[in-house]
Image (cartoon, rainbow, N blue to C red; front, side, top):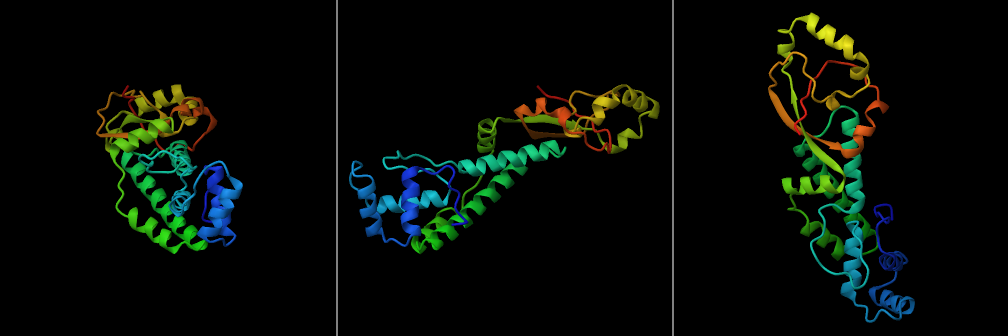
Length: 237
């Protein structure tokens, strides 16, 4: 079952998956369930289907699960999204909100495709079609981005970039003196994470917000990038 993510699934859910993986029918699965969990009451085909569909999407299930809106991404994919955000920030290429929306959508689509293949693998073609047909129109909203960043302990930080041509209007002496004074800090810090620095008071022309993990303040000195150009950012509290 190479297309299944099991780390966040329920114990009862895994039992049902194993039954189907062994080739048991729904009727045989119900009998096996009643033998394994004699105190949990009646077990129906609908419950089997629900457990399997949620497993296909990486979502937890146990008998008696209360309903409610499912998260846009399962826990495994949320962690993957956080890794993408962190990796981008540490490389000095922090993601904007639109980039995060794109990444979340790609993860959702990949999970759907994997779920479809998993359900076909355990001989559940009807459930596989349901998974494909019910998720095609999902969108990621900006409020969701804010919500997911909060869950992932990340934040959107405003930054402003100086227009490249304006560097040429500044006396080289000013840049050199500033660079010599702060050389160690500049060379040991990814450009995206240099906030509140502007030795020339040059007007900024690009404004955007990028996603940064909260703990990144404690990791700035752990990466020493190659110094390409002095990009200046202003921190908006």
